[in-house]
Length: 377
Ligand SMILES: COc1cc(/C=C/C(=O)SCCNC(=O)CCNC(=O)[C@H](O)C(C)(C)COP(=O)(O)OP(=O)(O)OC[C@H]2O[C@@H](n3cnc4c(N)ncnc43)[C@H](O)[C@@H]2OP(=O)(O)O)ccc1O
Ligand SMILES: O=C(O)CCC(=O)C(=O)O
Ligand SMILES: [Fe+2]
Image (cartoon, rainbow, N blue to C red; front, side, top):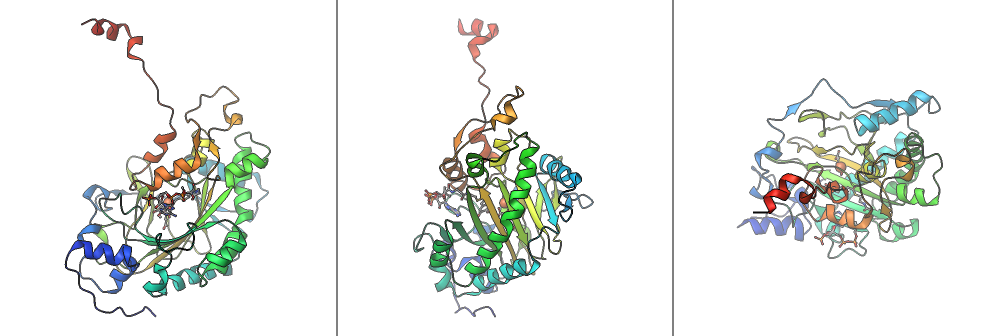
């Protein structure tokens, strides 16, 4: 049962920000007050709303059955999906359904806690930088806030997680992460073989899956879902993202020609998507595709992504094996923690984060005779 909130009235918009972000009520607190209309901070500009966009209802991202894992057709389907779509769903992946159900239930338990409990994990109060409760994405940088609360758990060790993660969900999240590991290794193995990387040594293991972060996203019922977003357009900064969603739906992936494609909930499935780090390491062969989540007027929604990342101290760049045939590097070397900080310090802005790593074509003006002539005047 949701906690009944004491009546709160807001005099101005800074009261709402304080209630949601500083007091730790989240948008969940706003939603449970039964607001009749969306506070103005959450109203997105027209171009960021879903209405008016082209939705390709007859298209869908691939669904890949992993039960016949050794079948070369499965590997082929995975690589093709990562190249063409950057997104696919997997079924019969080997993570027990019970583990998935338990993590969804534990996520609801966390978001059923009173605000005083959740508040303990706000950046200012959290016992560790590795556990963080928040709302929206980057509130200080955003012109319009997003209708989402989250708990973000950076994995360091079982001991640290046992000591610091919230008691209502730590065991279930740890089990989910442990069981997903084998599937993630299989996927990376296949994707890397296709790039002529036949051995994942210690260095590559760190670059591909040296750190893991699990987020629990909570999208409460919204009074005017058409005016806002759950999560704005972005690509993930991970190597791969392993995403569990519940049965509500609302995740959209960018398709061709400015269109959007829904990722329908499929019972027992996991959504896999390529992140920017793998796009960089594969020199653009695998694509991290823009995606977003709409707000919902009648149901609360939960999703639980595991972001598989390089270590913060790793320097990422295209793998030598990918460039061995003479292919030109499209991306330069970047320190992964710099890359992630750049992502977190701005509002969601589609695929712009990766510009940080792009090698810019320097056209020296003096190279062209025409400009040399102009320079004379
Ligand atoms: C929240 O909504 C989201 C999230 C996402 C996430 C998509 C991903 O792909 S997450 C995978 C990211 N990779 C990693 O976490 C592994 C590497 N980690 C690191 O490099 C570092 O741990 C770090 C994340 C860069 C933090 O380093 P630290 O030195 O501790 O830096 P800070 O100063 O604390 O943070 C910098 C800046 O980022 C903000 N921030 C930090 N962690 C989070 C977090 N978990 N969630 C949200 N924001 C975070 C922090 O507030 C700082 O900003 P300030 O303005 O406060 O200075 C996709 C879509 C979503 O909607
Ligand atoms: O909630 C979802 O389905 C996707 C969330 C997402 O894109 C993210 O957390 O990076
Ligand atoms: Fe995402």
